[in-house]
Length: 328
Image 1: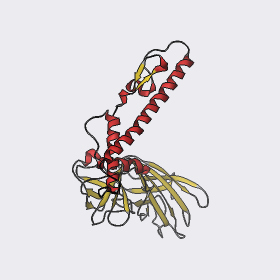
Image 2: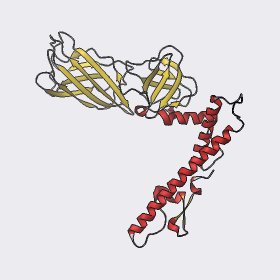
Image 3: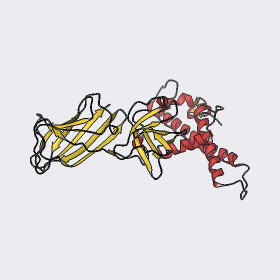
Image 4: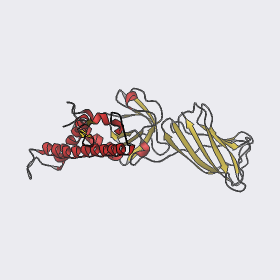
């Protein structure tokens, strides 16, 4: 099959040919002279002809390669099953992709590689080969080479019986260890791990959650202690590469008490330890509006919420919402 550089386009019937590689960025080689409009029209024609040639070539190659892969399967023959036909099509598809991108090199994608490519293109997930086992509730033992294959912020999907579980990689991978978090929604059980896949862009992958729940902290104060703990507490986290974003709320108890900043530690394993500066906001939305700040204290997983001057941001029955972005 022809590679990219084998397609030739006649530029405006002048007899001058441009190869595919001369068209990188759709900018023909050579110098322009004369009326600019005519050259723009010629440029537009070249682009359209090149795209048409490539699409027609690809479609014809799909037809030919798929037909060739199925030669030997007669209608009704015992060897012609849906699994065989699907495998043949996937192998043909993989070979075509390789041929288009390498110019017909001798190394072709296997049927399994073609299937993986199709799975990624259709859903954002790349199937994993090799055995994964539980190292802890928030880490996997994986085959050697993980540090070269995975990155912090990648998503992971797997099963331990039942439905898929989803987690984010939250630390730089070691050679044979991945540290992950699914918040309080998902942890790794003591059970076989199957149907494993990872996503380079998990928030574009089908099924991956937009956020994970966090175990809500028990709050203390930097001044007079609470008479009663805040109620109606929630907290969620979303991981984005080297960053994560926490949102949540709390409501002060009807007989709250407490002065100064509110502080609460999140659960180890659900969040990494923070080692960089971060900032966020907090607002009291019940009664008189009050703005303040929220932050994760350096070297900890502890959130601190207060009015701008460090005083308590809310009191009896009042709601507070907070939002913090951290790099880790």
